[in-house]
Length: 386
Image (cartoon, rainbow, N blue to C red; front, side, top):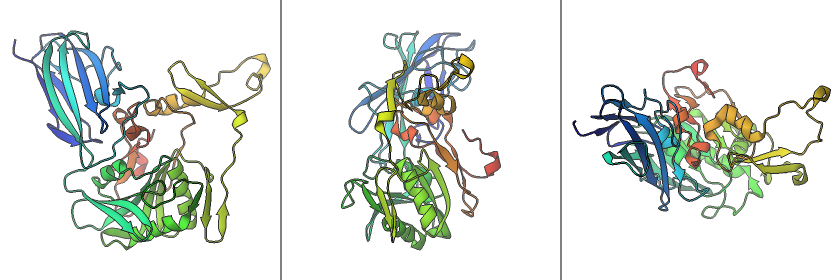
């Protein structure tokens, strides 16, 4: 029998948001094998996944056609070995801070169905990059603006987007760098706990974000007359405020954002938006059987018992499981909310779409805060939104 070989397409390297085809050749007919994947994050923490398979009658195994028989996942999951990566350190999350370097994924094929005991049959190493070839990374320190601008290859002009992430602070660039590879000029914008910016979100001024909008609109490689916004969580709420008060905003994608101002006071000129209040005494937190946190308001014992029967009720986490099952993490606590403003007004832009299911790792900040990918040549009506 010829030696087994592990085939990856694209070979050698790909972008993090790019599908990866995985196949094994040279196996015995219907041979049982285990495939393992592993990577280390920038702090050295190890993430692992494995799945059991059986070769076909010709000794071939194509993960796009063969269902996993168990392991970290089951069923037909061509990219399962990547989205199912679990940390060896409990509750650790996969975060990419330096987009100039790739994650290096190690893939192995073992004989039999023991993930740690079979003979090694084949091995491959693959780099998952966050900057497509030709994408330019430009640190921005203009006036008060602290950001990084990512420009696609070529001279442009390109449709512009400001990317704002949620609570946690700092400047994270992984989503902006990937979007730039799809034809956008993307400004990853920090707004607190970074450089000389405020240390918290208790007091924010919309003039800072207005300055970032004006910077992007003035850039010679950004196509006007308007730009788009992409925000998650607190960043999504800020994008709503920007779209409400500022000029030059023609499109916005809001992910997991509150419809009201939260977590701090927002000021703009003579306007003051106090934060939406909450009553922590009316919130109950419990751990589900899957080890996830579920948060819901307190209610009276008979609140959901019409006609004397207890009607089924889903927890917040279970509701997410129906709609965005792979997106929920071990820290998930509130229902997921997504809505879209008109994207067609970004003339000449590619269309924003959800990332495919294989991108939604259960322990990855990269996935739980990034559910959009860009594809050209598709109308919004044909987008398969989650």
